[in-house]
Length: 310
Length: 299
Image 1 (cartoon, rainbow over the protein chains, first blue to last red):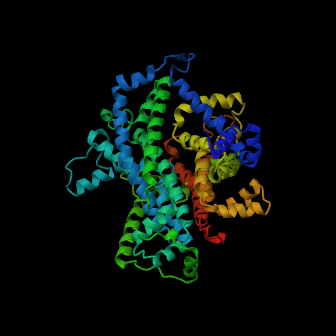
Image 2 (image 1 turned 90 degrees about the vertical axis):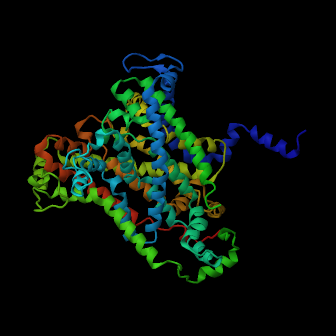
């Protein structure tokens, strides 16, 4: 039997689209321009790619439907893809949380400076992101001959007797990529955190001191973090996508293919099939799998973040 | 444990009026943090210093191996050479520059306004479709652009956008990143302010323009920085073919690609292309300041 309240809600559910439009017209009109552009330039291309992932498509002939074959090949037959997945997850597990923390800690540390000084300090930390492909400088540092900075210093200090071939030695490639990624990590989330910290209600700190907050750390946990939860959620999405989509630095620094696939990631695998072999069906399947890995990671991370400051 | 948010408003207000000194900051802690910041700062800013110094190096210093960070005999030759090449350009450099300025201004403005407009209802109201839209926006950030490039190109050509400014501006205006950023800041604007504006007869657009935008200033300034940086360096993304529609970074990359002899010019180009985003960055960043405190309403 329905109670009166349930009747009411079920009535609400049956409202005609016209009624919904009338009630929320202003909101829909504000969203409309974006919605159209989003549909045309994001939603349709993404859905097309997902459809292509069920086909065999070499970009010359029309795609032919192959069902789940791309996905089965990827997960069962493609050993290199499994290496790529392993590398990517391991890479993200380290760089994701560390870079997220770095973004927060640095924005927090420079937050109290005066706006002009803070702007310059922000530029200093953001410099690797603003200077285009500045990460190429690492190629110079880890250059394989004795002129590379790392080799020169190590030989000077007697740590090495001959130059190390950094990008040709399996055990060095991965740690170097992690180092470079961390160096690049103060990007979008960092800027969002700085803006978010500015919006924390300053009076809460004063009130907090009365309420028994004794040090910076309590202030951080009980006031600052809860006050900027939306920015923290934003930053999490950014760091998840960034740390799982590493490819450019691997391609540029470790080369392709990297030695024994040591720098091989899901996206370099995609790059291989998309740009070199032109197998768009297979490449789209890789993108779709990566997409679900990110969505899944995001759900878990958002759950964890809801406990912050609680 | 202390729950600040649970503090009664009246009590909070009493303490608002007084100036409280931030206590409990140890000198050692501060010194340690400054040192830490300084060291990491040096580490980060290095490529920038390198780029600046490189632009003023004479050729023989650029080719010295191992490369030296600081310039020994600074010279303006690289810039002079660049201006000679620019002067001989088939299409005047001012045209390329205009293209870039136009694309950057139009793209940044449209992405900030269109994204923020959509972010407001999604952040502050629940209505049919709002949850689905928010989810689609977050998830779309997770689909890699490499494989969507092909469908994107087909759509662009079907719409007749290839080889027009629109091919760069429209996809930028549809930036989900911008919307997502704005949405996460607008959530924090107190509902009371929106209701107050509505009581005064404001419609949704007026609320958006007069209440939401001023109060989320830090957010859209941040968005301007990101969008500007992105568009300033654009080469047309494979969508622009006409020489007279091409942006300046394309023209300069052509100059640089002419060979080893242009290495000095290349370092000057790198610096010139970087100066504008840096100036925009510093000016914008120093305008990222608290907007909530001036809203006058404490919840």
